Length: 521
Image (cartoon, rainbow, N blue to C red; front, top):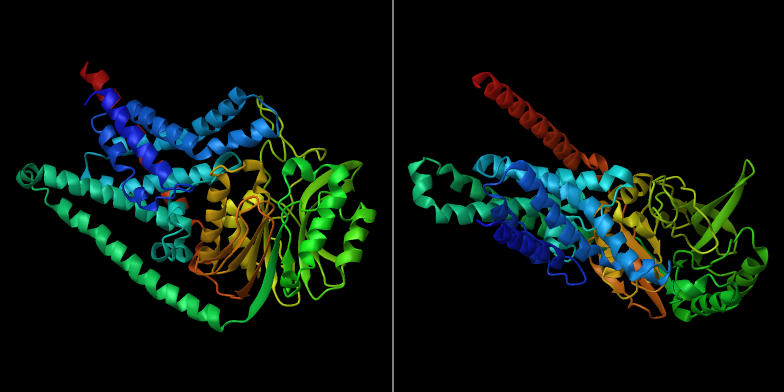
C-alpha cells in the first residue's frame, strides 16, 4: 500500500473520530473510527506507526479543539495566525500520545489474540496518560462520545468513562478482525487459526451484557430517583458577555440583571439558586458596597445561593487570588466558600515554560489553586462544587461525592468560546460525571449551556446559548456509593502499567536481536 493511501485512511479515521463528538455528535462513528487506521498500520515499522498515529491525533485534535482559537483572538487579541499556532501546538502535544498508540498497534497487528486484547488496553493507557501528565487534559476522551447513548452510558458507574472507551476500542478491533477473517478465511483455515472466530464473538457477548446491565440499571436508578427526597433548584443565566462583565462601569447593570432574575416567581420557588462562574465580577468579601447592594435587594429569602465570584486574601505580604464559589444562606450571610482547585494553564495561571503568553481574566492576575474535594453544606443538601473545566476531570466529581456531596454543581463561563463546538463538548461531559457518581448535577453557565442532569444521565432541562434564562427543576438526592467511586481510575491505571511493561518487553527483544545480528556478522 502506498503511503499516500495510508494517509488517506488516517484522514478517514480522524474525521470519523471528530464527528463522533459534539457539535456534530454522530456517536455511532466511534464504533468504527479506528478501523481505517488499523489498515493504514499494516506492514509498517515502529517509527512509521508513530508517525501515522501522531498524524491521526493531530488532525483529530485540531478538529476537536479549533474553538480554542476563538478566545485567543477575541479576548487575548492575538492574530489569527498565533491562534492557529496555539491550536496546532496543543494538538501536536496531544497527538504524541496517539503516536505511542500507533507504535503499540504495529507490534501486535499481525497477532490476532494480542491485537484483540491489547488494542483497548493500549488506547486506554494513552488516554489516561494524556489526562494526567503535565496537568492533564481529558477533553474528548473516546468514551465521552457516548454521552447520548443511554444504555451504554450506564456502565460509567462501574469503571467511569474509561470502561466505555475500552468497550468502543474493543468493538473497533473486533470489527477489524471480522473483516479480515472474511477476506482471508481460506488462509486462516489452512494455518489452523480458526480461533480468531472465537475471539470475534467475545465482543457481541460483552456488548449484550453491557446493554442488559444498562437497561436494568436505568430502570433501577429512575425508580430510586422517583422515590427519593427532592430539592428544587434554580439556575440564573445572565447572558453577559465576558468582555463586558469585567467592566466596572457596567457592574450595577450586571447586579440589577441578577437581582431581577433572582426575584422572579420561578426562581423564588427554589431551595437553591445557582449563579455562574464569576457571575459577580467583584470580590464579595472585600468590596462591601457592591455586595451590600445585592444583599439588600435579594435577601432575606427562603433560598440558599451559590454564587461565582473572585476572592483574594493577603498571605505573607502577597495577595493571592482565587476563582471561587460562595455559599450564601437565606439571610444573606456567606457561610462557606469553594476555591477552584484545578486551574487552566495560561488562562488562570502561567506555568513555568519557556514559551507562550499569559491569558488571564482582566485585572485579576494569576490565581492560586484551592483544595480539591471540598463540599458545601446547606440545610437540605450537600453540594459538590466544580468550577469551569474541573468537570472534565472525573476525579473531582468522584472526590466530592466520596466526601458526602449528594448533588454536583458546575459553575462555568462558556462565553469565552462563542458559538463554536466548545460549549457543546463541555456540557456533554457533565452527563458522564452524573452517571459515574449517580448524582444529580446542576450546571450554571453565564451564556449557556446551563441545565440539569439526572443521576441516570438524562438531561432534564437545558438552556440555549446566548439567551437570558431562569431554569428550575426538582432534583433527586441520592447517596449511593458507586463501584467507580470505590475503585476510581484503577482500570486505566492498570492499562498504563501493562503498556509500559509491553514496551519494556519489546525493547528487550529488540536489544537481543541487535546483539544477535552483531554476533552473526
